[in-house]
Image (cartoon, rainbow, N blue to C red; front, side):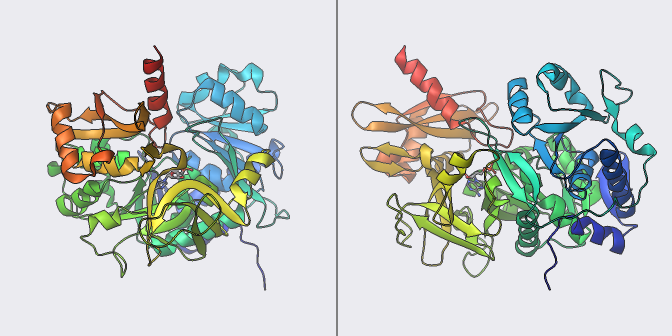
Length: 522
Ligand code: AMP
């Protein structure tokens, strides 16, 4: 028998088996699974009434909210395609993405209608303007979400013919370099990714997830499906705030959270931690950028919580590998646990050199991570040439450079374009950053290659110091020399107030390189 893998199975199961269990906590609002499913059905029926049909693109532009969770399922069960948008973009990005994806229906948080109104004259394909949250925002053509669904039936929308290879979402990548690309994920990609999360992150019915990860980022890494399917509880967090995070962990008994290392840093450095009586020992799942080994140690030793690292990309739905204590990695070996780890079930990873040959599993030879798996996307929306560049000979080429060992344990050394080549030697910038993070005065840092007449390139470190900390370039140079080969040590330091990052916490190294290039051109 073959039953299509359709993502709305996950909510249907929870609503059937746990109708009275708390599905979502969002500020003062709480919804059971029965209520969650009812609101989803109402929105599906409303969208059908507005003429939204199979394969039509519906955009969601919002910080985390219960509306966001509802949008995933309301669109999927009528065969529409969700386009979740990063809410920290600017108007020209929105204009580009909404037109590129030919979005017909906008679901927009009340704080973001102004930015859309600023470009509405350019959005030819949009027919439906729906606003959520806030009160009485009846500007222009905006229709209030709750008013729209109020009169709608809360029963399932009519069945339509669907296939597991149908598009579920188009997720525009954060674009650390060029124009964002629309990653097409199918029901099948996301279904299998959700199973992987459940297995490898040990997601259970008793889990309470704090949404420290933006839901727009690769559909919350698939957590919106995995946790729902198991009947866990979603605790919505709208903005990252240390105090709110500790309050919610304490009050709601949070057991699970996913985040980029930069959010973990906020949590570790929050000065008021001692005041909270926390009875759970949450599992923190970190990805998106290399986590410094020191962060893992602080999380587990200072707070007594659990660290799991995963690695993946939007193009892989995203789960590819995980690193956690097991037969490969000892619990107190933080250096080893800061690696991306070993492949999940059904993920075939190879590391290839420039000629397409496998690199040795010796922990030293560097190759590009390439993956073959059912979680790999079906291509970039209307960008066939770009798709053909990354899916070659049946493998998706990630652009991440890594080493691996005899146990297939993978360590990312850099993004392909971020590797520093000094005197012909490859230098991994995360390796230097990892050392800098061990210095007590360093709060945040980024290392990039800068032009050098003699060596071609040498590492330069941009450093954010902790409040009231005082340290100079000489001391940091000395510190690096004690722990790194001489040629890997930064040849210059710049102390800055903050570092440029994307909304998903990735360092925008190209901005730093560009700034440096302009400074040297003058
Ligand atoms: P995105 O598609 O925005 O999720 O970005 C994917 C990219 O994030 C990958 O290609 C990696 O460069 C980076 N990334 C994700 N997880 C990790 C990790 N655990 N360690 C290092 N880099 C990571």
